[in-house]
Length: 317
Image (cartoon, rainbow, N blue to C red):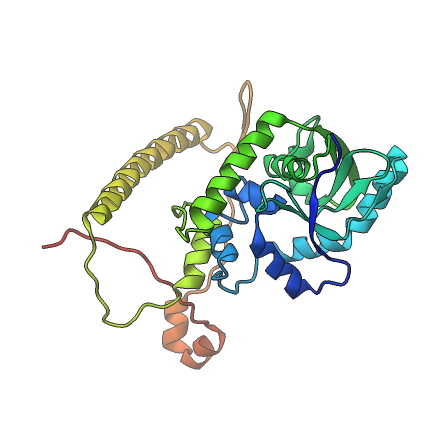
């Protein structure tokens, strides 16, 4: 098939700030998973805000992990070569699909002598289950298929260092059906959202919640506005969800109480499939109300003020 990507720009001497600006010119491999809703760190709305240059400056929750991922990239690539015998080389460029100019790729490595590439990762010990057997996290699978779409590669390898002491590598074959899907959703996002500056619908991800907190940290005192009928539909939907959650919480409590009754004073019980524990434990807490009354100076010294904007609603009169 042959590598068919064009070079948008060289990254050999590119500063990080310039590299970030270049990412606004299209959709990269990690963006693909976010647009598809498979990246817990970044929602479609966050990607949209980044592309139009209006994303707030926020500290990413996985900044430390991202840092060590970059530091360990060369080590992971070297170990991959040692274990497989495959030689790899850097491609110091932002690559661009020749037909879909908004499809970009900044790949970790290319395999020498083959129409293949390599993605290097690090992962927490807590995520090792995601790499069992033939498993590959969905976000990374889409990222690699995106790179194959841009470069025309026949396959892409992914190598990951898990918990600092377990090394795994896997080969991902080119999937034309999945690539066609990616092209469709990325085209819709870029041409239908970014170019027209029509934001996607906000979702329920933690990334979207963090974005909203960064965009609107403070309310304007005594400010009011009139809302349309669509707002009523959102409130009605929220009320329905709250009622369903209350029902589920009641059922949850019922099952927990029934298990507690069965165990009685026993700390541990064994069923056919489970081990159940019901142990006594103590927790020490500070009586903040008493501390404030009896030691106000100490209370002020060790207390901190946090800012929030709780969302509440009630029936209008």
